[in-house]
Image 1 (tube, protein in one colour):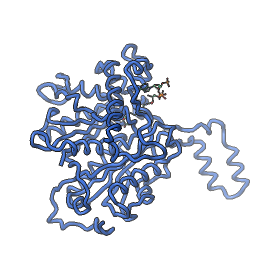
Image 2 (cartoon, helix red, strand yellow):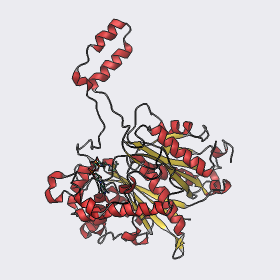
Image 3 (spheres, protein in one colour):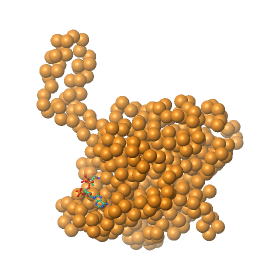
Length: 447
Ligand SMILES: CC(=O)CC(=O)SCCNC(=O)CCNC(=O)[C@H](O)C(C)(C)COP(=O)(O)OP(=O)(O)OC[C@H]1O[C@@H](n2cnc3c(N)ncnc32)[C@H](O)[C@@H]1OP(=O)(O)O
């Protein structure tokens, strides 16, 4: 192992160039449906467990990592730098700088891309990108009235003053301000937004249920052939994601009642079976320069080639809330001289089955290609045999900020197993939609 200060040894500026950022590997805890196995685990507990799993897997005990960047979408105010606290609670060296970042469901992706860029520039030699979320331990704020009373109480000097202040509490002050998945600009939940997009792109209920079933079957098969053995570390009694249903069938899925867009009549197609559940979990990915990985005798699974963020005006325009990747992916691929047909694997985050299928429909639509993407025709068709081949969020669940790390580690391993295709490194795309009408996408290639 290098000494704790070796990581921060700057390379002379003149020698800095764009170098490669490699994915060494990843680790996550099994994801749990909210209110289940991790009902009493905090974000800090889970992120620390994900980091410690990475430490154990790659021998990083007392190692000073260049930077750790992670975050949570649902965060308590006491966790002002959750990531640093998780590092301090882990077996990593306490001299590892760490910070929170937040880009909704694309948090882990943004962390991977930002840290990879720092590695490419020679600013750091190693990094851990991660994310965590707990829907079980979501922060619940007190009402404005109660907050004012509690702050006054804190300042009161005498017992008499305190009693007087407490006497101001009214029943309405006691109702909590609970978090929601509602978009602040529209008040609609993400599920309601997606229901509109799913209807706009005329995605059938059958197509959504088929995608959901494939996600469960593919992920269960991947667990059975031990694909996840070096990606998932058991935690609090769970060895697999608790949402995973190997026994799901199209008949069972077809019986579920619509839960979003119920006012859409026949176009109300989104159910608990083709939507991600509320989930708890954490993930972490180890990134490095080639030199650092070699010096530490660690594997190099894939390179982080490029990343791109996008946003849509879902408030005034006609693009759905979760459609930003439909624009970001074509930009990313064009910049790298690639088309959809050049990708060996695509990992498209299954926020809802309708999200994936609406994105694919937009790419196949000539009008969308011409008027929205500025192309001569449709952007292209995804070979479905290359899509989410080891399952995705519908099966694993979706602890918002932790999904990016899950996807990056999974794809890196798939690329490493695939190696070369037609004499060039296998390529894979990751696409993650995010709240606020945003999305973050990335391109990886096998070593
Ligand atoms: C955040 C970002 O930036 C971007 C994004 O990713 S957007 C996505 C954000 N995520 C969300 O908004 C989460 C959305 N999900 C939810 O709100 C809830 O999970 C939900 C409303 C969809 C469902 O909640 P619920 O009703 O409590 O679900 P649950 O009780 O587990 O399931 C209902 C039924 O479906 C069944 N079911 C679920 N999945 C099934 C499957 N694959 N096969 C068979 N049956 C299934 C369950 O067994 C259950 O049946 P019973 O009632 O007979 O027990």
